[in-house]
Image 1 (cartoon, rainbow, N blue to C red):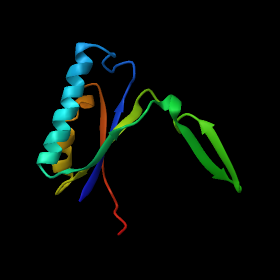
Image 2 (tube, helix red, strand yellow; image 1 turned 90 degrees about the vertical axis):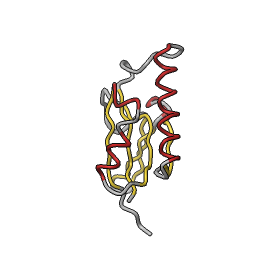
Image 3 (cartoon, rainbow, N blue to C red; image 1 turned 45 degrees about the vertical axis):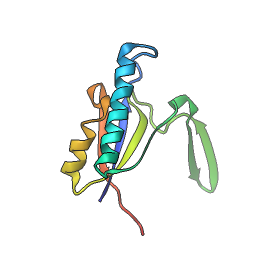
Image 4 (cartoon, helix red, strand yellow; image 1 turned 180 degrees about the vertical axis):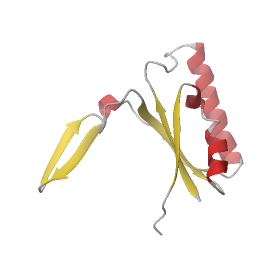
Length: 116
């Protein structure tokens, strides 16, 4: 089964650029990614650019409307994801606990519905 681990955090609570905390956090991401690869769980994973680069698209009454920014205005922003292959959600949660942002943000873990 595949699980999506969505990584949310409040930009004001993330480690600051150039800080030792950011370096440690990035080391944590590299270690988590490598452990997922070594364990055969890694399918994909990437960071997203900031919400200021986002566009939201809606089609209503046949009209396409594109607006700047994310769909919802929240304190925590979606910053990246991992797509993991796991036996069940408990295994996915165990792996998600390795994601450094869990210490200052939220990791949402959801099963993926595969259409094959």
